[in-house]
Length: 290
Image 1 (cartoon, rainbow, N blue to C red):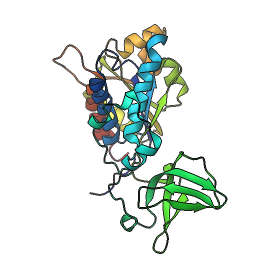
Image 2: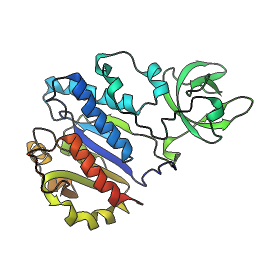
Image 3: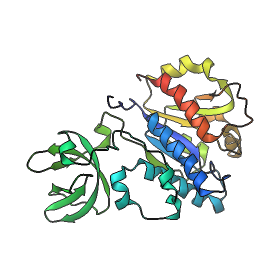
């Protein structure tokens, strides 16, 4: 299978900090959060933003849990031991589904690498000679004449094979294939986050929105010209309309489209992770080729 090409636009999804707050057991919380990470990778999302919608008492713990698990999932397996400690938030990490994206290779030998290919690495040590970087093969490789912070994660390009493996620092934005997502935490409420995010296409998902079939043509047209896209999702206890109303705003004030992505739903509620899969599947089809 050919490597998946990244979207021509930067794609962000926004989820509430409360989306697993109603689940008592850590195993189930981990599973639900894992579904979000898997969906983001499947549909080539570049950023998962967590916005605050809880009281200050619960906000930090729930946000930290979601952020930790999503970051752990996105980190290639060969780097996790160096970058993550044994902590309670990851006690059920073994139940998380693998992403199997291009930046999560299963190859673990130098002979498997390709000249010009990219690889995620972590800084093992730094000295006057340069920086030793672990890229998940038999031994770390030296990045000469560069001193980086130990335990920092980097993206590198394979610049030489044969006698000795050599790498050069790379910018993820220059990689044409999909290269994972980043996780960010907003410190401002939802509407303010949307307004300050400089998105040129904002899609709010809501049961009270227009049926997606009625806005498909307009959405497809917008995908072809936009550079930064946001799709936002509500919480288990309240939708985006209610969340916006708490800020004395309406969704129409901040969103280009308020769409019902699951028309005629038979269940009383749709869980956040269910809405993410349903919505991104449809939007992926509309954005295909954009």
